[in-house]
Length: 466
Image (cartoon, helix red, strand yellow):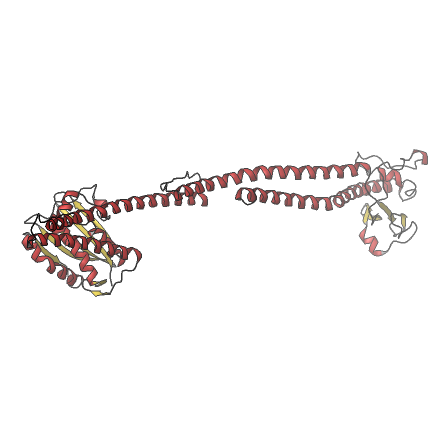
């Protein structure tokens, strides 16, 4: 149990409570006796001072004070004030042990000890000056008539006081045990509160290792454990999404490879068996299918290198207008064959961008190819650029059939195909826009798209200005 957080937290609470209770009990135990004795002395000394003042006022001197000292001290016990005693016979004095102790002595105004409380200053001796200053003066009508002396050594407690101390110590023991019980309960509750979400996270993580990728744990707090649970839920969703994309991509790759391989295998098998004659047209068809496979493999390799960061870039400062003109010139002949125009609209004084020209021609080539594929005869493809703060934006806009709102957020996903039959007919791999996104992000840029069905699509590429 001690190896778990649950046990460690519970033990920690117990140790903290035990240490605190022990220190408090020890401090009180060491100081309670002295504090109690000091309280008794202070209370009785204050009462004794008033009693002696009354005695001196009534007697006019200290005559007989030594003989009545026991009775005088008994009046210092907590009780209503009484008149000063007179010369009480010995038989009427309080018995020994009646709450009186030899706590105090008395010296007259000259420092002569009348009642001793310390063997160092016996009755009749002259009190040293420092001892006189340490005593408590007794004043009558503003005149110092005597000094109350306090015993330097404690005479000990009477049975009632000793019993009070004993009960105080017992209360400390019960308080310590109660603190330990409360600490144990609080430790168990807090440890359970902290470890339950951790156990849920552990269970969900173990489920992921068994292949159950999409796991969600309940977030019940906004603290660090709650943030950990939220991060785990996001990670689980992303892992499940990526896994679905991987499976879909694997299925799409298998499909895209199987179709041309089936065509090639069928023609070769038929020509080898003599069912078909090898003609230039049939070889051209076989070669076109081989090119299709090569394009797919090349696109997959490009994406793989981009994902792992191993795709090298030979960057240089390039004018956006020159870059767009170069890309447009490569596709003008193809556009003329489809009766589609390609225009470039970019100012020559735009800030340059730091890019790999060959990779950017590949990016723009993929976008222009898509634009020409979906733009009908008489349509137009426009390449443009503009500066927006520290960002240089490139646009490829067409007047084609557009993209539906449901498909628009997914067009940069790998193997995304809005019309699978059309893609199969045109020989597309479904990786063109995914390569565009990967290469643009490799340059530190970003991609976005806007489209209106029936009116056309605009692809935006944003780069930091050089």
